[in-house]
Length: 147
Length: 142
Image (cartoon, rainbow over the protein chains, first blue to last red):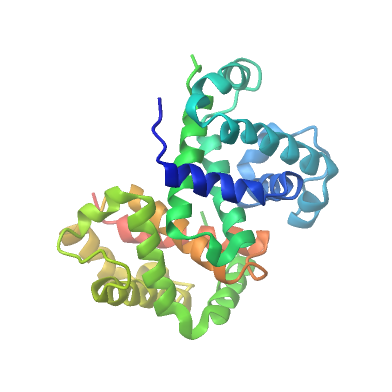
């Protein structure tokens, strides 16, 4: 079980409380597809991903981004059992979606950049530490049931 | 991985925006890296790691200068950073994984200070540029 200090929990909750899951989710997924274009391989049925503008405006990207970040919110609500929370999702990503776990790390790093751009100075080094730890734990939990 | 004409324009553009703050960005990048990825401190056992440390400021300035040098010679980063590449290979031997960590922190610093300028396209170009710098600095490792 991952240990979270009181400060880390507070930093995570205070940021999450101000996050628009729809906006940040859409932005994070769009940036993933733009910054690491090979990640588009999982979204061949999403329609037009031919340019950054197309990706940012793509309604399927927005919707899926919201879905992904909503799911991420489950980790924030269950910091003491992230492994259990993502057990089924881990199996899904392995068995059905066939997603290389490296992609979870890439998305985690992108999410940090999105949060940094939204929160500015408020996204202090301590805040970044707590959130990088969280995205790392989530990535690990999603990779855990791979076989 | 090659920098396109667009990438070079984007990188030059964002560094122009950073302007005279490059030294501060360098210091903040290191500060964030040491806090976020504590294992990176192992390369600086002699450093005072307190906030505002003169050593972190000085080293941040060096790191920023190297990035600016790379931007100013973006058509030949390998040439511009050749001596630094030798230094990292022969003396410093910083594990290659750490360049990605430094890059992530630099992106965070840029994002916190210039959110509007760090569009997805600029983000992509800057990420590529930082990867290219990391590749050059580790190119002679073996």
